Structures are given as structure tokens and as C-alpha cells.
Length: 178
Image (cartoon, rainbow, N blue to C red; front, side, top):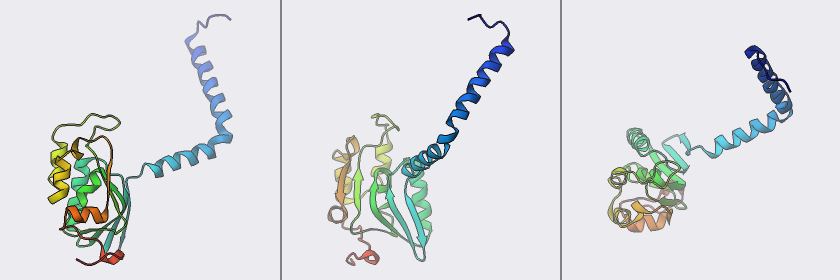
């Protein structure tokens, strides 16, 4: 094969190769779009439903601690009851001690060390920021090791209330009134 000496010819060959790849992928585009949509849904932080006097936070994986602190402030000012349902992991746990929050009777709450995304690196001070939002036995467990645990420490709503009696189970979701 002869060497290409004209730069424009090299560019044209490259464009033709890219065009060929795109053309060959055309039949698979609906499948690729469906996969991308599935990935987007799977990476969503939480389902948030606002209706009437309630804001439901459902299946929240957590996320950035500072962004969660901002969300917490907005929820506190909402004037609505915040019901935490399904699972609440990581930074989501900062929402449970809101004065207008309760946890669903079947909620599962998970604690682990805050980390720099996609690493096992625990940044300084972030665990202290999170710890400021916890009370009573939850705070003791946090500083007793959960704040350094790479593994998720999962407890039930009932266990959470046992460790922090100030927390309420949502009576509007079938829980007992406190």
C-alpha cells in the first residue's frame, strides 16, 4: 500500500471510515438509545413526588454531601411533610432529621464513609459535616465507625427510631403515631 502524501486525502479517508461505521450502526440505534435511557434511569438519585401536603423521597442513593445540604434547606422551607420511603443511603440520611421529616415504616437506611466518587478515598471533614445532621444513637454509631466504613451499614426504620427516638415513623404511611 502506498503512503498517503496528501493531507486532504488522509482526512477524506478518515471521514469515509467514520461514515461507514455510522451507517453500519444505524440498525442498532434504537437498541443503543434504549440502553442509554436505561442507564440514565438507573443513575437517577431519587424519585421525588410532590403531592398535596407531602413530598415523598423514594429510593435515594445519596450523592454529593453539599448538594444534599442544599436540598435539605429547601425541603425544610417547603412547609410540607417530607416522607422518606424505600431505601435512603449515604448523603440521603442527612434528610431524616429534618423537623418536617418522617421515615416510612418499611424504609431501609444505609450509612457508609463519604468517598470521592469511584474511589475508596475518604475526604477529610465531610464525615463531620454529615455527622452534624445526626442525633443520639445514630450519631454515636456514625462516629463509632460507620463514618470510616467502605461497606454499607443498613438498618430498618424501626432500628433507626430505636437509636434516635426523636425520629418519627410516618403515620400517613401506616406507621404508628409518636
